[in-house]
Length: 430
Ligand code: SF4
Image 1 (cartoon, protein in one colour):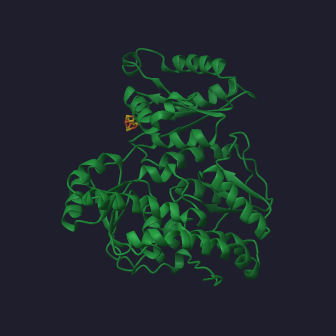
Image 2 (tube, protein in one colour):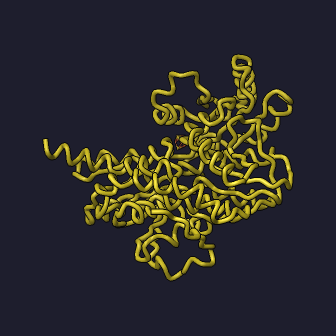
């Protein structure tokens, strides 16, 4: 079952506007995490960085719950809790922040980059964290870089936190027109190593990543940079990179065998890799990936899936689950629809797919109940109530913490969706 046909490379212009005509736009009560949650995977990616949330006890609780057991390891994130005096404007929050940062850096001399992360409370009292970051950076010159971004629930949903964090790093990226492939978006280290090896075998020699593994190891950027997005939630970062001269490659996201193959093919085409060479390197991976998928496809094929808006990964996942696992899509919800960044995946969705953008959670839950899907992809807050109503669910947060990118991971990705259905079948049997 070799696959060496030229991969699908739809550009935004190829996306037929008459496909998916019934985009349902909703606004109302939402059931999503705020952008602070992204600290949980970003701090693992850059062990020499520290994320200091300037917020309330609610914010501290949120990160601790999201990070689970990790709070007992040496923490690389924390919360500067705004007290009543700060909120009432009676204390100089800037002075307190400076003192706290200095204490922290004395205790933790290994920190190289400090992110001051804005929250709802810091935004409401208009604490200027951008200025604070500038001031502290000047004081700590050559020792620690202090950056700022917002992870507040007012401005960001869930994975948008990573988009904001990466944007905060962009001004520090040196300019260079050197030819390179830049992978943008957090990948698990092992997955990234595998991709690098594959690109090396394809003859693409200079491959860099953003975010890097060491926060100070920042990639240069310029006209020779070709960007492959590894994650679909990086709209603002992608545009900012284009402003710095980089070319954004259009490709489906590397979920599943087909998506991963097309994603790698986009780079191969941009770097002039001969088709035969591509087939030689990638076809065996495709075959292996398809074999790993097969047992999960048996569970998933024909099952009806409803995706609630959460991580912005819904469209590429829906594409993978419908095309490679045979699932039927009832509704594909996204927090916001970036047509340019989703173009290649949208073009591969079944033409009659019901898309929805934004959320009015009660109305959406009514649609879920009416449709009685076999599986719902949703956030933690909705999962247990839906399970109690007899509807199987998959937590979307697992998808940002699990290594799911690449042909080799296609089986694992399908397994994440097959598992709740298998478990349900077992419980019904017993
Ligand atoms: S940033 Fe806002 S939404 Fe997020 S935990 Fe803090 S208060 Fe809640």
